[in-house]
Image (tube, rainbow, N blue to C red; front, side, top):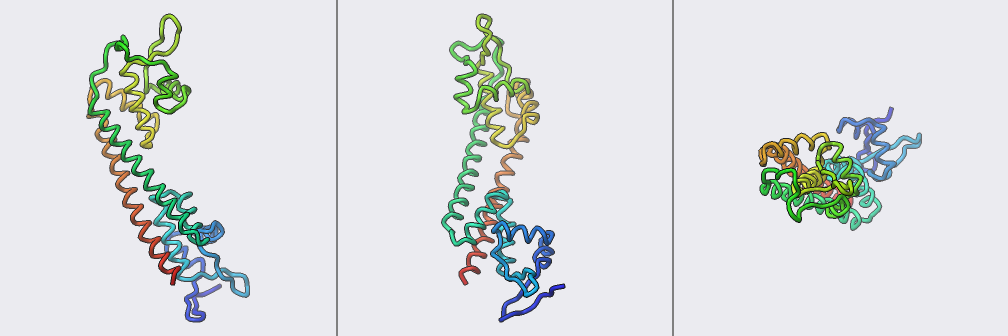
Length: 243
């Protein structure tokens, strides 16, 4: 079995040394190297991989990037750095921050929409306030099939035009569709959204969604901190590479 050793003043580490430090398998470490997350390792005369503290720093950076960026983007960031394309890595990082900002704006939009909630109007559509499925789907940037799926899940409740049989969405239906769309963007599943909208209809106010919004806000804050933590570890790795 290989052991830690010093070679030319440089500490050599085995795959198991990197793996144990993070609760990983040695195969995971090898997979990370194959994916370009870690720099290419040297080999012993017998073909065993040998790593250095720089590889350990790369692994720490990757694992710190994952919570904020996700596995795929974190992999792409590390691959770009290891291929000496730091601008590509920075662009990916910027995109994650932009997405977080967009999600924060979405949350704020949901909160604004909920602050403006009024008791659901009667069964008749408000004058000038009704929409057919196509225009509503276009307004939300989704397919009509998605609205039909939401209807089956109880998120929206359009009525049928007596003459044409077309679905007609009242102002209240449009509000429910908007809330459903925004909550879907926030990561909520249809089965989580349906009871929230049902409660909002019944209560005519914000209270049923307060816990969900608080959880959403906390998750955005955690992602923001994770982006900061990942950036710090990546900066450490970049400095060590430069040296």
